[in-house]
Image 1 (cartoon, rainbow, N blue to C red):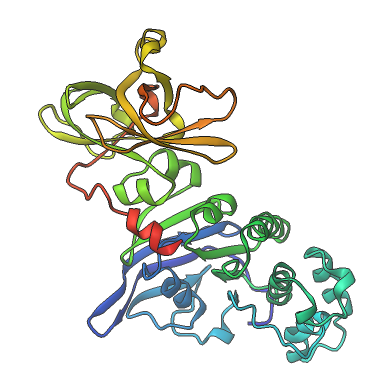
Image 2: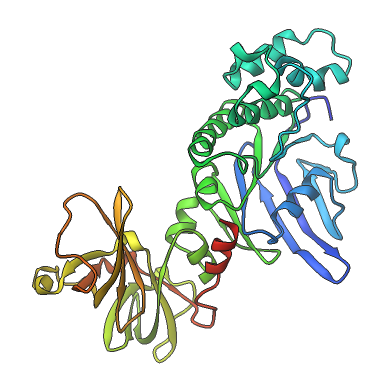
Length: 382
């Protein structure tokens, strides 16, 4: 669609997609607020790209409706929708200059005077000095910005980004994450971004929908999803979580659990299920929340902290932190990330240690779930 349309939320109501007997997307209700940066995050085959393609009009939903603002667009072809899509491949015209690549959409609509609009877009994506170059003379990150400028010059209501940074190396990808966020903030257009990269989604998006098996597992702000995962899949897929199988001893505003003779505490408000005395609970803590001291210093650990004893099985120095794997009766292979401020030479493989952390940093999950959900998926999609 070529004219500026009234804005509005993107609303998906009961949309699903079947291919024969295979269900790629189960019935889904999702609202993307106008002007937000929204990410669909998940591993390969989770349904995120199919969902994006249904918004774009490149796939017909099997059920449900797609609304852009007050307007239903479910059965409109892509060119009649106020959306533009940026793909991983960029799809730039190799024979045209950067200026003409960006101007393409305007010229196709018969607009003769394009210089002012194209110059504004070149400035937005900081490529003014490259206007007369051809795509092959630019880096991958610069080509990506041309693709974004070409899409934005049509003033779409929604910009759809399908794994747009997948072809870039890590350093460039990080730069482009900040760049895309800056552009989105400046233009104020709704961005819907599909990615399998957790860091990418967390860095750029206001809201993230974590998808798994054609369903949204959890929806929220990046910090909320990370700090309060509601399922084992989200706990494992977004970063790393230590999950401990425990029995519930008592459940009030504070929940007391026991695992292999060790007592741990956590707030009831951080449990995604209602804990009951005598029941089971998966107790979780992120590796960076845990402190590590040699066993002989256990007396120095403040009272009231959760603590576990164990032995260091492995350690890896990764610059900003050292990552430890600790074997414990409570849980095999607990992970701990210790910032490299003052490194303790005693913390080496084989050392007996005490792990301790603030009970407030502990979360609780339903013990009926697969404790390893999301772990293999992260490896497959990396």
